Length: 281
Image (cartoon, one colour):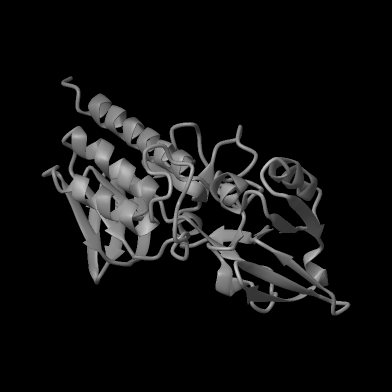
């Protein structure tokens, strides 16, 4: 039996494995190879790794984990999970694996506005996080395709960065076309707007069904409800990364730094739980 199984090989899952490995805990990390930022060429706003390719960040993380003998990594897709009084069961490749604790770090998936041509540039010239991608459009015009009240906040955040910030109702955009060093928005009246980049508000959803299968509680955002240490409402089950957030967060924090921090905090709580239960009577 493992002391912890981690599902998800992104920054939150890798950090959980690293923290547990450094405490010599028996850990299995299961990685399906599907990532929310798979289309992102360069990740930003992460100290010491600003501009790194997400794939390189994962590769470095795996290389670091290789130094810890109690950490095992498998490239495999989980087919089912269950929890009972003795721990958790994870089904993978026709095998049932058991662990005392489970960390869900399976992340979110994004449903983009159904605008022709938009998805082709997702993660490059089309983004949703001004902290992660705003600076790359510095001194050039950008568009915010967002009809919600939050658009005004995004505009205020981007105005010191971009030369011009245009807020456009996504329902007015008929198509997105690539032009030299930017994108062209074709509007419903046949007029066009050329910008360096576009910010959208995708509809996030859980990438994997395991949180629902375990009966975890969800926030209004659709993320799993956790405490500050990643504990869910099910004993021994933790969640980390952008798939979950505590009550004091307004929603999922889709940044690498927060994902890494949440993975570490979940691992710390597991180490403390193991230490408490393994104390001599």
